[in-house]
Length: 299
Ligand code: MN
Ligand code: MN
Image 1 (cartoon, rainbow, N blue to C red):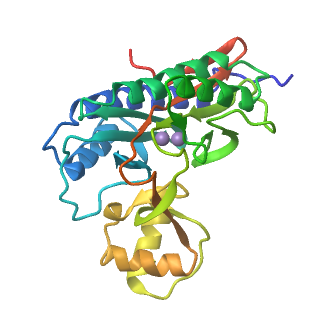
Image 2: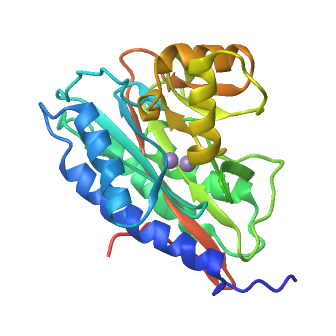
Image 3: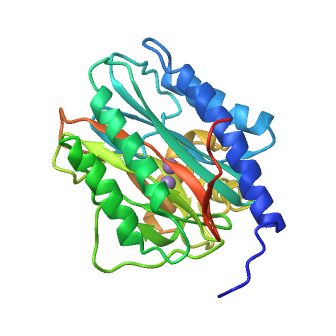
């Protein structure tokens, strides 16, 4: 068995990231109300993270109804919340050590069961975690709770490890029982994120794309693209960023150029079939010798 020092600086930074994130998630959730602006909420939450001493690890995701993930306001977004199912997902980086959390706010007043299903599935999953547990067992706990409510887990989205400046690493934490899985070990930092839906349980890529990340750094000729790339490599590194985070000229065009040269890749919005609903809940955990520590729990 490897000897992992859970008091090491990197774990302290994961904990600090988690503490800031729990506070901002709760404050942001309180601001999700009918008539509030998506763009103002995202900018407020990202600034609040900085104010508390962190950096946003990725743009605030605001996913509505059938949208499951990767939706964030465009630079000129003027949408406001209606009576919808709103899923907010936020991340914090402290020197590249990350925390990731999400919660669903029901403005419809009609989806208590769906939001309870993902929330309970997350708690059941956390209960299973201890050194040596197979990720397939964690997924089985998620599947059982969600199916018990009569819904489907979204099976092509999963939890993940959090690496240094890396938002998605091994191991993969499935949202259902799988035969081939990996084992969690002391010191693993992972995000567990069950999604529950009244749809089929498979999301597909939509046309919208507002979140990007660096793929291969290389020289680019176009001036706007070069300016964007400088900011990306210096400020965001390999972490995801939004079009609206770019300070330089013509950011949308710069991103199209960078994408066409595979310098960056995009994260299209992921959604269930139209008219279906998706709820999500997510926490970040550190695996400890006798279970796990949830870094993004509210006080
Ligand atoms: Mn997340
Ligand atoms: Mn995540």
